[in-house]
Image (cartoon, rainbow, N blue to C red; front, side):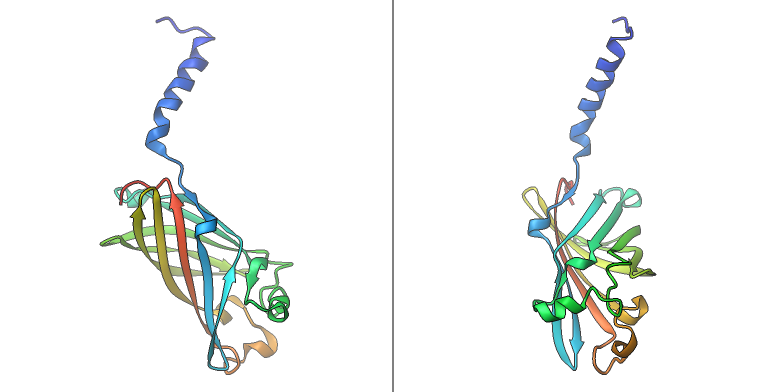
Length: 190
């Protein structure tokens, strides 16, 4: 076959289309996912949730060195389930959402632990503060959906969450557990 100026675009399109099934797009399924946080206020556990978040995912269990996860959380979507407390969260002492509308996580490495368990190292940024974290992740598959779940600790004061009078850890504990259940599509066999 002789290629001319009209056949090059057609050939390129056919080659691209042929490559698509091997590179299934991986997506977060927000309606089936959840990100929550648990802390103690005066010794009593309090749980909150983020309603809006998104992720860009490239995961291949056979090629961990090429994996990437970039996660963005809309901090203004935080809720503790009460209008009074929810009105406080965006304020400068807490999340300061006017200045810092998003929290992010960017992976820097994946380590397989076996049996669908991984450690994902990366940088977590909240309220202008960045910290290196290692996030344990358990992955399971049911049909076309892969569930990634885990819990990891942070220190709220390390991210300047709860400043001023709220820095007193006898009122609100410094330890926070971040819990996630992420439903993903397009992930290959684990």
